[in-house]
Length: 479
Image (cartoon, rainbow, N blue to C red):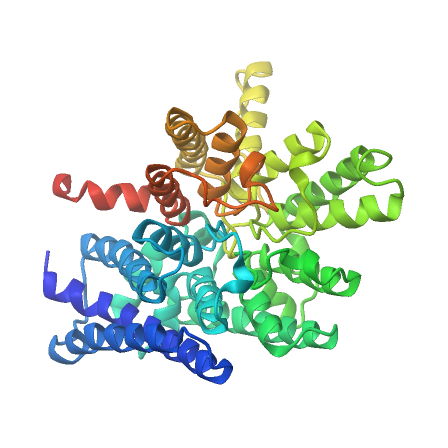
């Protein structure tokens, strides 16, 4: 393992963060707020720590798988540490634990927050907070690879370590082209939503920060009431459309934008994802009508937004779903665990793995009924190999196990059961709000400091899809 090689490529991630820190300092300067110097100092420090290895350590045409894993995980950890700096330097409610929680939540696009009064935070710091979503949404390493010069085989290895294994199966592009596809869709969606929100009456700052959060399926809003602040059906419809799009595999979206409009619907996973969301909206609308809302229009409006927000792991809010009908809450908890499609910016188990799981169940049931039958489960006409099925089932089991362990730890710290479980599920799935005291209108400020570290770990485990993060700590056992 060559430490200087790892240092060189991790430093490039710091340079990427420095760019957005300088942009945030510029926003702070325009608004003449108190975050300018904290952001500027943080930008300079990130630039200095990033530029020296990039200059003095020579580039390498090849890296090992082990080095690739370390670069990816360290890239995330170093970015989260860099994100802590402006919060700490600004002060206020940001102790080191709170700053770390907010930074990890931003980069992993979780959207959970310790802030009780978001609007009291300077505009420059809020822009940085939203920027961490946008950097992390597409994947820190993928983002860096997309904007940096070609790095030969290094690019391919880092791309494959960063991307979800299940997403790679659906991305039928070579590495360089895949990166172009990802960045094109990501930037394109961000620009389109920004213009649409401005057309709905938002100012430029709010439109950009909400677009960053929507397309990254993150959920950080510069308003205390989130999207509910605007009380605008037009704003909600625009945000819902882009949340749904951001939950679809970007390779399929690229095909749609390239002229083949029906490309996403040819995927059984996309059809399942959209059908699950539609059915959830119908059911929750029924549960809310006459209970939370007297009219069908309001019940549909608020059910639709919360289902799409949680089902895509975005976490914006227009209502307090914690007080809804228990059956509505259970459906939302299921969506918190599942979320959207692989190859998107969404978190969670992913709809793809749920489809694979049910294909495996269908195969087993057929074999029980017809022991001599040779059953080959398929998705979109492609046979699912045994390793993919085993990996999918193992991932789901491990995922739920981690949520359960995290909930147990929080409960042992005195947090109530509903808050512990839903908070753990929401952070593991990078969803943001849970239920109980961490619901869509609440925050995580009251969680004990050790609990915030536990939840920060679940955010990273969920964003790095468990195995990458676990492998990092088991490096000494690698051959």
